[in-house]
Image (cartoon, rainbow, N blue to C red; front, side, top):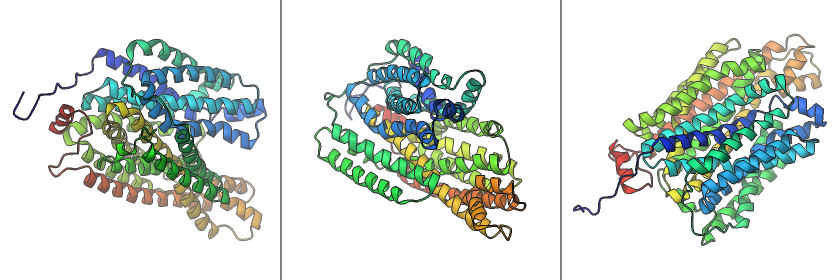
Length: 521
């Protein structure tokens, strides 16, 4: 006893067993990320084999991500109730089975259903792995490092997806891209029961099905709406989807407040230090999602690189982001998470400004600027997730994980729609004034519809390619300027909101001794 009360034992540091468990948890994280992008190169081949039309191809490509995004909140809360390890292992077994079903699909409809089921299984893996990390690593500094490793695996998987798919398609049939999941899940099923903790479970295991349906409809409506805008522009169906998403989302919130045992306890995110972090995850995801699309297309359509060469040239930025994510916890231990996140966002703004100086021949400028953007965004990425997960009691970490991942997913999708629409408007305005005289209305409309259409027109009509490339570069530089201003605004928000009067970040809602240790670093 002390004058101030009983002395609480500090959480034990993680040992070799916990770090081996983290390596096991990295496997499903890597796989889910790979599965989000591995299908890009396989679509043309499977479309021919299965006779999939254009609409069906879109569903084959998108339904997995839709289901993952729509069920993250539900699966995170479910893991808190029935046990994260149990949910993870059930999801792993399901993922392996559905991977086999997808690999050997005999029709396009069967593949769509298989991909949807894979998305359901994938939604169990992401929040479970992140919540189990909070069970394994009780010390804040170690937890931050472990989450950085987790985030790095997700980033690496996203980058490796198209490359892995390309290698597999070079030697095997399109179904091989789905078979990747089987051996990975077998390893998880064997090692998981030995290395992973059962974790804390809440007393009630009842899940309110109405809340599940409302959450799923709200998230799917919003994600589908923003992706529809990105592809086809704003149409009446988008307004309907946004209305459905807003109404069902409001009903979900109202129901959670009324239930004695809600699917998602909204009070978990009432802390002053959590709300700005969620803003950073959503808006930061928007900036990264929209600018990634534009930079990738710039390299292919303006710099005229092949998809493979463009992917290889983007690898340095992925490596830079992974390194920044890994270094961030060490910097946060010295200076605090808030200042590190703010500095990272300022660095990202500098990178966006560099991208905004590019011209048609500015491939090098764009690539260097994009590396700077990656470094800047890497610093707040893992720290933001750590602050959200660490802000709640350990028994609610699954729900917090689902919220943080859903925020990033919605932000990324919205960025493609919002910044993509802004870029399209700038492109059309600039090209409309620069097209050669005498073009027919149909030909002009095709060129104004997008850079891909302009390239087709340029193959038949001289004098179109140059202005189209100039217009697209102008669209990229405009988005770069907008992203730079938004990044600075986020930096100010983080710097102000995540600092206490003594200049340190408000601690997460962790055990008292852990919180005090966090402040003393």
